[in-house]
Length: 189
Ligand SMILES: Cc1cc2nc3c(=O)[nH]c(=O)nc-3n(C[C@H](O)[C@H](O)[C@H](O)COP(=O)(O)O)c2cc1C
Image: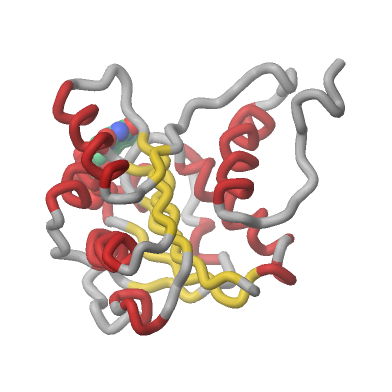
């Protein structure tokens, strides 16, 4: 079954994760039926600041305004099966944990949870306070997966992109997509 995927980009540090994930999904197009994207205002600001461009405008997926509750994935009936919030700010995490559905990011996450589908939050901040930790526990109890923006180094990445890909590769696995990537134990040097 090809997947219908929502990608929400929020204003935490780590726009590179969203950029690389969206590129990777284009490479895996044979497994993907549809990708809808929504960005928060802060996500655009952080992307511009960290990556020095507004290249999200060139990504060939349908982008929806965060105020657009007419977007298909604002309703469970559209049957989007997977949503990734990447990166996920602590503010968005808190709003999802509280059930605040006052924009398309939080409404889509609320829909995914109520439909018992897959919600993956690439939470990013450091250090974490007790409110962050409790919100992570709350969304996990509701069925979401916290996949923090914490790269690994055992594949010996050499560039920033390779470091970021260690997180993106885990996302691809969690989303249930098939891809060739570093696997501990098989290409282990
Ligand atoms: C350059 C930059 C980096 C930021 N990094 C983080 C971060 O890593 N984690 C976080 O929770 N907020 C971070 N923020 C703050 C969020 O953008 C801010 O809390 C915002 O209200 C989040 O809104 P959103 O979730 O709707 O995007 C950052 C802001 C800027 C300008």
